[in-house]
Length: 70
Image (cartoon, rainbow, N blue to C red; front, side):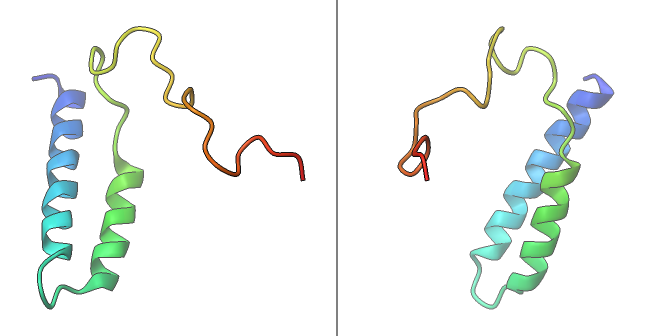
């Protein structure tokens, strides 16, 4: 596995484990929030081939409240 792929996979696994921890009774929610944010920010770019060619994560349906003139 390429180093970027391994980092991406490891970070995703840690985010999943943190989500499981956060749902446990007695979990420290402040810890989960801080660590979850740090892990999300540190998530490397997805490895090549994970998304189809031309995929644009900002392209999608308009959500309520978007596109309205104020």
